[in-house]
Image (tube, rainbow, N blue to C red; front, side, top):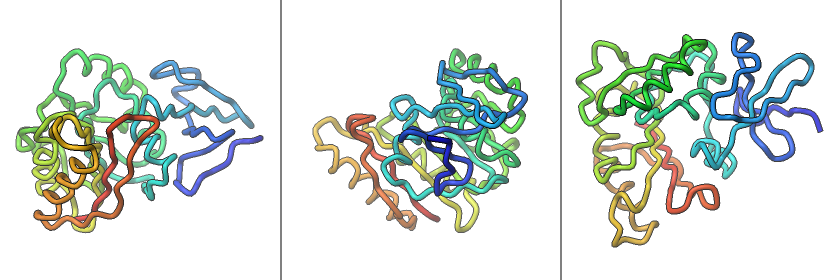
Length: 221
């Protein structure tokens, strides 16, 4: 079976696995030891749903359509696994990748060396005003931060940076919200908080079996 383009621009599928196209300047380069496949002179990188919550959400039906020139604010970039795949997709856009850990940022910088559309920023997403001189209004905000106040962090960044009619995607870890709640109750609590700030919930997708007690919540401002 040959590589097939999915309904998501820039995302491909082969044998029920997701792939993104590796930029020519990154040919032969892996970010997290992912599989590389070459077809018709084009190199593709496997997108592991057990390593990337966004890949898991896409496999489970997330309706995400990212323009190639999208401006993205990524909160909780870590070492760049998911960021690198977004970099493959938005070839004419920019990702402002916020990470609070100096150790993770050092690894993220390695990913950015051949990917000029990623702007790594060592900062704390709890304080969105700290990177206001770097980050412009964006089309999309992605957050993967396992903290009890993750909904509040997301909300403050959405209010400060998201363009009108822009989209946001938050990966919610139920146990970080409240260990006493069932996962679905934790997701509902986050959705309720976001609705109070007048965000419209478009889709909630639980990420099992790829991530236990996690859900992706897609919303519009």
